Structures are given as structure tokens and as C-alpha cells.
Image 1: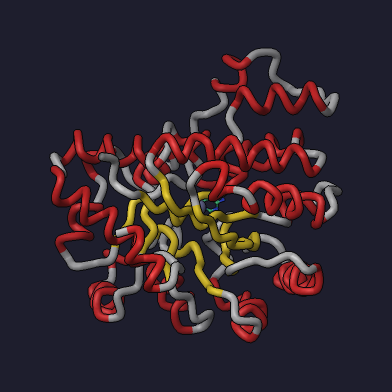
Image 2: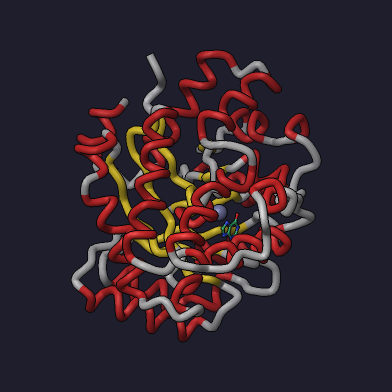
Amino acid sequence: MKLPLVELHLHIEGTLEPELIFELAERNAVVLPFATLAELRAQYEFTDLQSFLNLYYHNLDVLRQAADFTDLTRAYLSRAADAGVRHAEIFFDPQAHTSRGIPLLTALGGVADALGTSVPDFGISTKLIVTFLRDRPANEALQILREILASGYTIDGVGLDSAEVGYPPELFEEVFALAAANGLRRVAHAGEEGPPEYVWSALDRLGVERIDHGIRSLEDPALVERLVRDRVPLTVCPFSNVRLRAIDTLADHPIVRMLDLGLLATVNSDDPAYFGGYIDDNLAALDAEFGLGPDRLALLARNGIEASFLDPAEKAALG
Ligand code: HPA
Ligand code: ZN
């Protein structure tokens, strides 16, 4: 039987597969700068986070109508069901769409539509985490959060993503305070390319409950002690780390060291359409590289359940 997997670090925009880019371009009469799938795929060589983000934001141009966002989300849920995912806490980047003229509620509504039937259609429960682009002004994030809170759509949490270095978490204190006041869960990308100080700041200034990536935390023993003591989950994305050159090769990935240190590390897929595979592919590659074996694969699955925002009864039902 497949392990019950939980996906905690997944940008829905990062599941936009090349085939769907072409299909949506045709549907919406968008002229792509690539003539063939092969030409598009040839762009998928990244030197760092920014080189990836440039293509990621660019490709979103084909998402225009609510139905496009629904199709994108349903395609992910279908693939995730094949991987054995039973629960997914999905990131959605409103500013990646509003900044190019797509109304907030068109994009959010399209994603929410697909999530609304994820249990009957795919056997996957979901939560929706709105992520703010840290390389855009905090005031814009605040405005979008206020609009969402007034919209009648339910979201479960907020996060921070996009270019990290030079954009420390504390810039978003007011946004996260408003989220907390409205009962939203809080996460942030930190320690992906940025230093351990950003992880401290996400914890202490934003009050986040999970750190996305967090791999550079290993450079700071006091931080590791804090993360272990408080059982702060780290949503680690091995394929992403290698493809964005945060880690040289999969063999150099610190996931096993993280588990050995007692960190609540989980394995996730980040932007699977760009980084070579989904959560099951990440786990299979780690198993092949490190010989994780059934016990550590099961530990990773249990960590995912523990690190989720499900309530205790829901966790027990999964595990
Ligand atoms: N890091 C930061 N921002 C992102 C990522 C990531 O891995 N994926 C999509 N936006
Ligand atoms: Zn991410």
C-alpha cells in the first residue's frame, strides 16, 4: 500500500506543465515566445532562484480566466492522487496574477473552485495558503490580504515567497499581524538562499509555525536547537534545492542529516513542473540515493502529517 503522503510545500503555479502552457496559450490566443515543447523545455536550466522565478512568472501569462486556474489546480490534484497524496496545503501567489492585470477574485475563485471538490473528485483534502511576493511592497500584500478577508473566500493561511535575499521577513510584520488577528496560519520561505537570520526573524517577528525550505538553518547550531526544541517543521524540497543550485547534487542534500539531528523535516515538491518531479519522485530519488528504506520513508510520511495544519482527529485518520 502507498504511504499516505501530505504535501506542504507546493506552489500551484509551479505545477503548470509545459503541455498545459501550450493548451492554455491556444485557448486564450496568447502568442508564446517558444514554437515547440522542446524549445520551452530547453529553458528549464536554472542557475539560482531568480533565474527560475523569471521563467515561472513569465509562463503564467497563459492563465487568464477562472477556468484556467481551475484546470491547473485539477491537473495537480489528479497527479497528486497518483502519488498517494491524501492532504495538500497549497500555495497560491495572488500578486503573480494581479500584477499582470488579472483580477484577484478571478484567479482565487478559479483555484478555490477546484479545491472545493478535491475530496470527492480526488480523495485529497486541501488547505489554501496565500503567499506574498517578498520582492514587492509590503503595502501591496496588506491590501491583497484585506481584499481576500472581505471577499467571502476562505483561506487557511499566509506565507512569503519569491526572491529572498535582501527581503527579510520583518518587512512583512504588519501583514502577518493582520493574518494572525484573523485566525490564519502562518508560514514563510526562509533559509533557502537567505541566511539563518531570516529563519530567526520569520519565527520571532512573524510568528510563523513552519519554515519553508530552511536548509541554511544548519549553519547555525543555536537555530537548529530552537527548531528541534519547538518541533518547528521544515518543508524541504530536495529536487528544488538541486535545480536552483542551493545544493550541488542530490548526494550532497542534508535531508538525512536533518532527520538525524531530530528536526521535523518533511519532503515536498515546491514547483514540480519545473524541477523534475512530484513528491513521490522526490521520495523515490532520495530512497535511491541514500537507501532510506521503509522506516525512514514512513518517518517522513509521519512528519508530513504532524507538520500539517490538520486537527488531531484528522491527523489520526491519516496516520
Ligand atoms: N522559492 C521562492 N519563491 C518561490 C519558489 C521557491 O522555491 N517557488 C515559487 N516561488
Ligand atoms: Zn517554494
